[in-house]
Length: 197
Image (cartoon, rainbow, N blue to C red; front, side, top):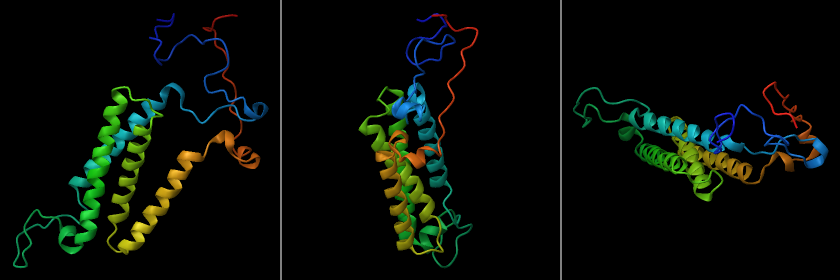
């Protein structure tokens, strides 16, 4: 236990440790003051995102776009059945499959992060990509006025860009002109509570 009440396992501390800040980059002579790393809060951030995806996919799965039939009629519609299922059957089942996949993988991601699976593990990366991808697919397929093939093409393009960006794009590897758009973060000032050297 450190002197500020932290447990040494990533809890915030009131006492600033000596040395450079945890996210100090150092590459290119200080042009970039941080690495593309969430630091101690990476798992916490992913946990919040996973919880939001879980809530959104649950909400989407229980409130189908287009609503529900309000009464039985002679055409075979039963009160409480989704209208989308009867009018756009393929779109409905794709929507539901994406909603279920997003809900399930975001739950797996949440349980994994709570039980201590490292945030940079392949399990977490794959679960996040599938959950996020499923959420995007539910949104795209909920628009019945567009072609389903167009919707799937848009979804595939968005996911390809996301996959490439999350796998290869790092702030410290951007071209010099792009790094100039992300100015170096100022170093945090020491406070009256910090230890003297």
